[in-house]
Image 1 (cartoon, chains in turn orange, green):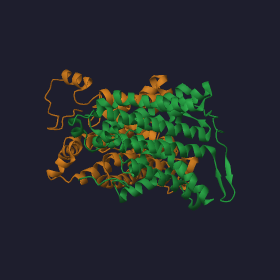
Image 2 (cartoon, helix red, strand yellow; image 1 turned 180 degrees about the vertical axis):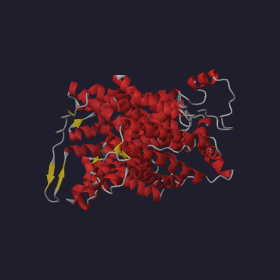
Image 3 (cartoon, chains in turn blue, yellow; image 1 turned 90 degrees about the horizontal axis):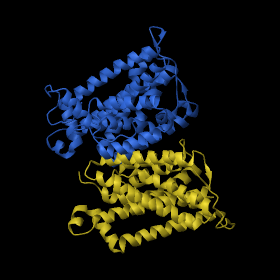
Image 4 (cartoon, helix red, strand yellow; image 1 turned 180 degrees about the horizontal axis):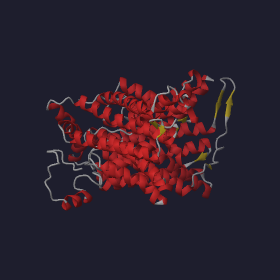
Amino acid sequence: MYEQVVAVNAGIFMLLAMSLNIITGFAGQPNLGHAAFFGIGAYTSALLVAKAKAGFWLALPAAGLVAGLTGMLLGLISVRVREDFLAVTTIGINFVLVAVFQYVPFFGASLGLVVPPATVFGRRLDTGGFLILLLVLNILVYLLCLRVRFSWLGLALGGIRNDEQATASLGYNVNRFKVFAFTIGTFIAGLAGSVYAHFMGFIMSTDFSFPVSVSIMAMAVLGGLGTISGPLLGAAILTLAPEIFRFVADYRMLVYGGLLVLMMRFLPQGLLGENSPLANLLERRRPGPAGRVAPGGGNRG
Amino acid sequence: MFLQQVVNGIVVGSVYALTALGATLVYGILRILDISNAAAYATGAYIAFFVYSATGNLLLSFAAGVVLTALLGLAVQRYLFAPLMEKPPLVSLIASIGLFICTQDLLRLVAGPQIQNFHAGGVLPNIYLERINLTVYGSWVIVLLVTAALLAFLYLLLNHSAIGLAWRATAQDLETTQAMGINTNRVIALNFLLGYGFAAAAGIMVGIMYKYVFPTMGDVPAYKMLAVIVLGGLGNPLGTVLAAMIIGLAETLIGGYIGFFLPRDALAFVILILILLWRPQGLLGRRQAN
């Protein structure tokens, strides 16, 4: 039972890390407020089920849609405001949103919101059910990432990340791709939020605060921004580590913060990034055709 | 009452300006957003608090807090940011966030999570001016005087000294300046020294003003620092001071008169997001070439 709860937590953060990776890893757009979209999904789903009496299976995609539409707005902002300005804007969005959740009575204010349980065919969805749901969602998102990464879309996004002006000069509509990456990434974060809300049964504003955004970023960075499997590995390591090593749980922010510093300093491409020791080891073990690697992309999953 | 709010806003704005100036200077030259600069705020306050507890000398503790934190900034530049110079800006940004979060937790471990009383006030008495209905707190006077002195020092340094000339040249074009035989590394080091020192001074004064220090005291100033430097046009010292005053005044006046459904601390970011949509380059920033 305990293991299952830990696994659900890992599954949710895997979704979040992969979705952030689409925005920051594939398209190279800084997003330090990803937890805001996680929160939008959670609150949308909770309010739909609790107040509008909608079913969980309707609320789940709705949560994704609302988060995705908000993310699309951010994407439109990203067209106007770039790099460092954008990074600060995303932090700002995170803070404003948490403040709204915390002070507006409609969102339960500081008391939080009690979320009705999810049901399937009239029966309550138990932890095992959530695990299956998360497994399905993770596989779908993973396939989506593969599809995005190794298609013309992924190449265009990689181009934006590496040199936006050069990509634009090749006739790519850079703005459309950026907005697309934000929409998809935040849509997935919204789905994760919905699952989180109904699994926990209770949500409050601090569940989606800035440190959560930093944690998601730490996971994606640890595994490797721009890789396919990296965020999965990073999320797995950072959600399981506090359960295995007690000291990690006590000094969580110290470990996450220190990890970000050390990774950026010594291995900015992440554990599974190009030319990292682990990626090289895996590559040597498997001397097959390197056909999965996109031409010009370079980052291996 | 109005005058009271205005003076209050200027005091708050001064603290924001001092905290944000360091990151502004760094951005002006390196084009990296050094969020960890805000960690200097709490670090400086704690060093001053410890020195004051040990010696009881306020001036000494202020100096120790500022100088030691400034040296820390030098170390951060040398060992963290210098090797990251060739990498994309996102790498430095993520590293600085990591350092900020890490420092905070480190302070909690070293000093304990509790709020510690920092009773160093009472240097200057509080005066009530009856005719204009204004209470002048001694700590306010200290904040305003120290801020004015530091800003004047920075102004003179940047505009009327050899290293200031080198700073302005480096801010315009790092490589060309280097090619002219200017030691840009010294300019960059000076940046971090000043930046961390200023933020430490702000933290110490806030500690004295409110009479306590705690590990996460740098949180809110850190996030507001970001709003302030972005509003000021990233890398523009004058814009930063202006933006800091605007946010300080807006917070006290809107909070005091109009009322806002969100807490005061969220206001800075609401202003930020609105202004960025209207002027993406900040209030005094130059338009970037697209």
